[in-house]
Length: 102
Image 1: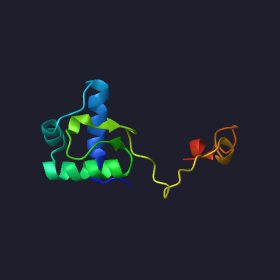
Image 2: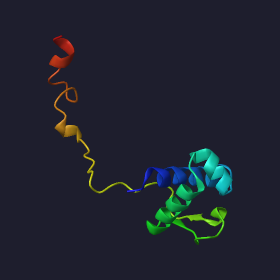
Image 3: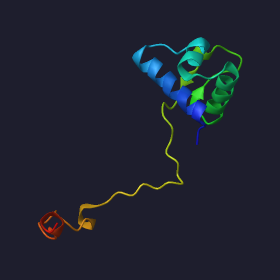
Image 4: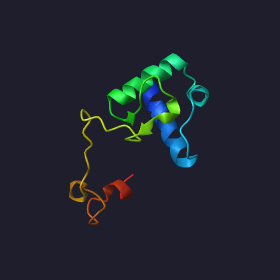
């Protein structure tokens, strides 16, 4: 799970690369994220460690390459999908008391 700064930088970089066809500079990242250069550097290291981007430390921030442009789902939170047969009202016309008895 990414920190807030890393997640924000990933979204900014993804948006810039897709919509503006360039990677943002350090100055652009500072302006758009509201973070200092030190926090941006730490977030970049986190993104590299988690395999979201490829980037050589101490090189320009514009040289980063996005591997995965959004955060992966957290496996601790399972999303459940409700099937149509699990819903007991309205699908087959049965159990319409919700709509008629108010």
